[in-house]
Image (tube, rainbow, N blue to C red):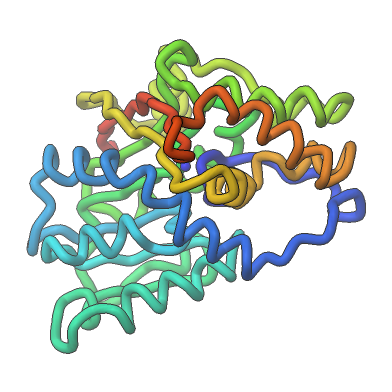
Length: 286
């Protein structure tokens, strides 16, 4: 949606439980990130991503969206200063997994810093900017996104398309009921990072604050499907959305209540299935 399913402020580090960040990044890359593939595909199909696309991905995480664009022929650059562990995996995907000689090997760039560090002095300006981390499920999860977009704008051509993503209405997102567990357990750390329902104009408000002009939107079904309960728990924990809850209680309590919240979504064969609708907005730079 870090650069997970939502952008959020972290609790103070001294209150955080110990987390194996490398293992968490691997869980994100192997379990959770693929849930957003329908969103990436819908956007790329609509915008006809191809060999003429010069894409800047903000908060690129472990690089799946970049890899999908590169396989369509796009030249891709990703930035993600908040999760070096995920960026390591992105490098593996884009620079190692691609067949030798493909554009995914030749043109991919991954930047440890922010958007300003992604400038290509001798190259062409970007003509697509993506911010695929969905907002609209936690209070304050869009904070900082406007600054990222503002920093990226000077690197893009005039009228460049910018894609923002967000959660759909809570009644259309089964995962909303599970995310409420994080809010309940994190009390009294509830202000920023607590669950709140997505609002109709979340994306438009972010675009307006960033000086972008809306130019279309769409909705995409992104069901969260897991092989079993353990995979579901690991996948959701990899988003970081339950960190404040673990700090306020303990990890065992979070795991217990997360499993209880997931139980209604577990099917007879043991798989876990939660239908969700995500929304995207296409805007343009001035």
